[in-house]
Image 1 (tube, rainbow, N blue to C red):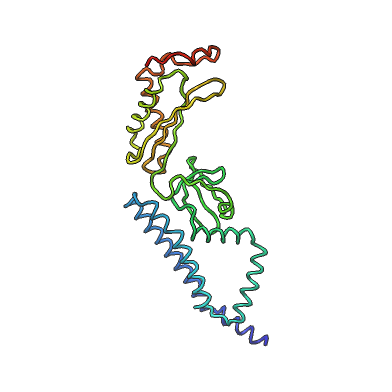
Image 2: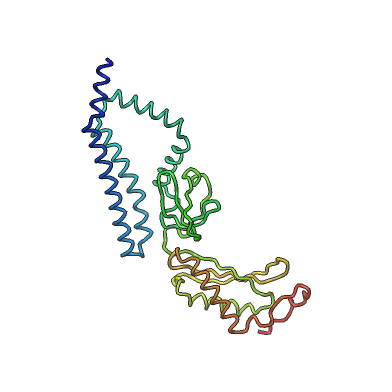
Length: 278
């Protein structure tokens, strides 16, 4: 019995089988690198479809590795059913005890792959981290923040916490630009100037609406909060558009003297009630 077991193990892990396994793994790795290169090339030629093209790689990689694993076990090693089931049971128990967190992350990654809450290219808020989804692995999700940092979040945490998705698979997204202004400024002229300035920004997606709202606020004194909402043509240009619109609005207000003599003095609250002749 013992001799038969040794002979069987020697047959399973023979030099030919090991060489075949290494060759298959190397071939699959080269294939995935080539597939990634092809997707990146297509993204460079068709930037309009960057998000859709980038979303195909994580799913394809999962399918390729699962198929490779099944082929190695069934097609190369070919263990007897008794050994296969016994090995799977023992391996499952050992791995389950030693790597509960890793298994939970992998299972969460598989669930997210077939029931996605977001995709590669989406701008999402996960906990305290906000950025573009640049990678969806089996165990982690990678975000690229505007500080040029790559944040890796375990998939189990992603699956258990609320996730805010800014663009939902589209290339454009809404950007909110808040600006604090003096309390006695001409509101109508400010709103008109803000919308006009936003329309002039080269980053704005003009097929969707641009809005400007005004609300009174108090923080160690009264002031007017102007909020401009517009859609950016590419999620990666979110900060560039917000900065550009804010600069254009402030330049317009200064050019039209809308900020002239509008400074608020908290020691003179009567300035709040000054009549806006404009």
